Picture 1 (cartoon, rainbow, N blue to C red):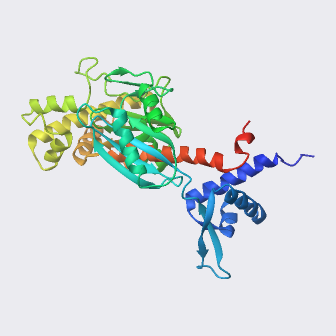
Picture 2: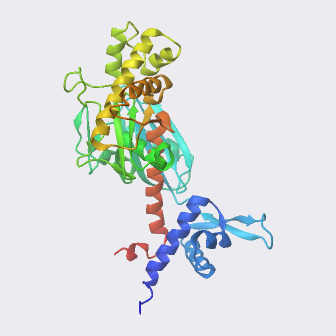
Picture 3: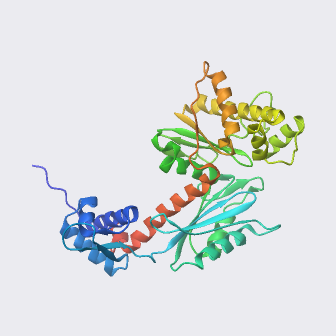
Length: 379
C-alpha cells in the first residue's frame, strides 16, 4: 500500500505561503474565499497562512468586497512597503530606470542621456535615487540590460574590452544591493517570450537593430545564452560580398550606405527609413539593402538552429525595413522558408524584459524573507 505524501510542517507552510503571495502578486487584493479558489488550499490553511503573513508584515488588509452577495468579506493585499527592484536599460547614449514592486507594476521611472565624460555608474545611480525619492521601501536588487557580451559572472565584454565584472561590482557597491547584468537583446527576447510575440512560439530568434544588430535566441522556451555569453552576436556573421569581420548592419553600415546613395550620412536609421516610407528612391534602395542583409542573417541562423520564427525588434520593426525583409524572404522561400514576425514592444523591449526579470527576482527575494522558515526549509 502506497504511503500518503507528507512533509515537514515548515516546508508545507513555506509552499502555502509562497502560493498565497504569488497569487496576490498576480491578481491583486483578494478575499479568503477567492484565495481558496485560486490556490486550491483549504479555508483553514488559508486562514492560518494569512495570520502568519500578517504577523511578518507581508500582507495587509485592503478593504472589503461589497460586490458579492452575503456579508462583506475583507480583502488582503501585499504590503505596499515590501520594497522595490530597479530595472535598467543602458545603451550607448542614455540610461532608462524603472522601479518595480513585487506585482511587476512600475512605480517610478526616469530616463536621461549620459552627459559628456560622465561616469556610467554614477549616472545610473543618480537616476535610481531620483526614482526612490518618490517612494517608501527598501531597494532589494537591480537588473541591468546592457549592450555587449555578458559572461555568467556578470562581466561585460564590449568595444572597450572585458571589464572583469567591474561595472557590476561598482554599481552594487554604490547602491548597496545585488546587481545582475544581462545582455540587452537577451532581455528583449525574454520580454517577447513571456508576454509578447514569442509567447506562443516554442522557439524563435529575436533580431534587434539599434546601434548594431543582435539576436536573442529562445529554444524550447528557454533563453540560450551560450557557454560564454556569445550566443546571438550575429552582427559579424560572414555575408558575401562583405569581407570577413565586417559588420552586417548598424550605424556604421547605414552611414556608408547613405554616402553610397547620396543621402545625409549623419541622419539616423529611422530617418532614412521614414524617407523610404515617404517614397524617397535613394532611401528605398537603402532599405532594400538593409532588409536583404537582415534576412540573410536570419537565413544563416535558420540553417543552424531552425527556429519556428524570427521576430524583428527595435529599428528592425520599422515598417519600411519589415517590408524590405519580407520581400527578400519571399525571394528565398523556395530554398529556405523564413517566418518573419514583428516585435510587440519595439525599442522598449529590453526595458520590458528587465522589468519582468526584476519583478520575478524581487518576489523570490522578499517572499523568502516574508515566509518564516523559508530559508530553513531549503537547507
